[in-house]
Image (cartoon, rainbow, N blue to C red; front, side):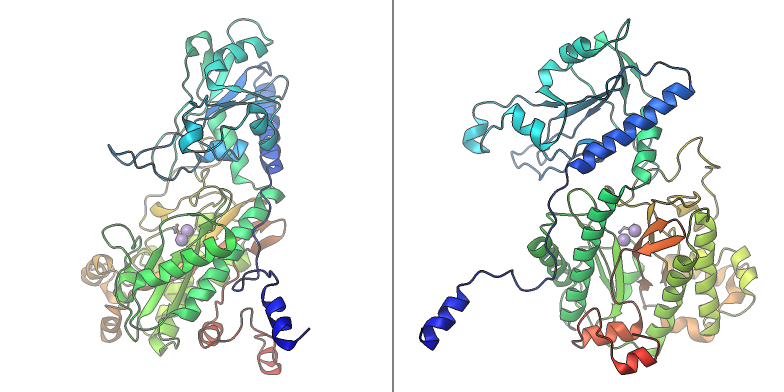
Length: 517
Ligand code: GLY
Ligand code: MN
Ligand code: MN
């Protein structure tokens, strides 16, 4: 073969797309079989403990597709999270049941009109759904009452365990299933929610593998964004690069939440990036960027924040604030293990940050005194972290009757999304931050309680600093925890990656000798 022909043959050989070391994993539907088995075991054990018969059905209604206001624009559907947990069903309009006596799982699919095949594609058979979602039985949604009455082996009206309970982050209630013929059943609205929520709190190995992939692709995308960030870009260009990378190489069509791409002073706006503040500022030389972005894969998410100087080089003030937060992040991770209480971790993060601010001559006085006056909440008004899984703010942080579950009232602590003791199998974010928020700083500077702690000569320098947050996703293990997020964290790692070094950094004689390899 001539050289030119050989080169052409090589060029036409299919190869994986350049740009990522990752491949999206096969969707593991057996994960949801295991989730259903876990629920069945928990609910049977609960019924047995309360001397109730192991009979009746768990019944959940899946999510419905929605249109944009009065138009025919259909919003991209994402399954309701509890339904996703138990069935992994992607399509709207389903119901799902579990027969507590037999353990059988039953899906009910919507009966689609013939027109569906013209506009939306093939109408899939019931057996297709039965096989794909690995359930024992499949029927149409207009058969729910009949099927459940026929399947019921007990006496009297069949009992339905429906999902009704408070989401303690949103203060909204989950919607119990409704269907034609419900009057033929007795319903229990209190038993299922706490039991199913607790199942979601402790992750299985199959769930952890998916969360790990969402973390891997999102960590890689953060590194990509870091490398390509340039002064004078717009914030939305950083968002766009993240979305492209996670979709292009990870097949992630959904994000876990709206991307926060804050630079300069916007870093002090905790939930920046919403419709009224849509990531559109121009990056200026000397700014910090605070990028909170996480992709979702097969319902399971990631929640990651990286903070870095947009020009690739930390100033001394940026180093001071960044390292204060990094020290808090690392101190918490080093202390995390089963039994540790989350309020204590929050306070550890606050104290570590206050100590660094004192060392950096931004604050003066006794750190315990600052803690007593809740000064930590001026710089970190949000909670240290939250459970994460199918929802970014996964439920279960304040389950009733499980532990002392009163929400604290003090500044900072009142924002915590959980106050529980850690348990093996939890996935929880660690996301300390230090922000210079006018609306908190000005009153703190004026208050007779707290003004004495500020060094008036230095604090002025930080008025338009914005903020730093470092956020990783942690899996609590038997003797500690594992950081599932793999982003550059040390200032020198960030500077190296931003100036073109590979990530993970290759070990060199110098950085190994520094203990940095
Ligand atoms: N990205 C939302 C959060 O960090 O909780
Ligand atoms: Mn978070
Ligand atoms: Mn976040």
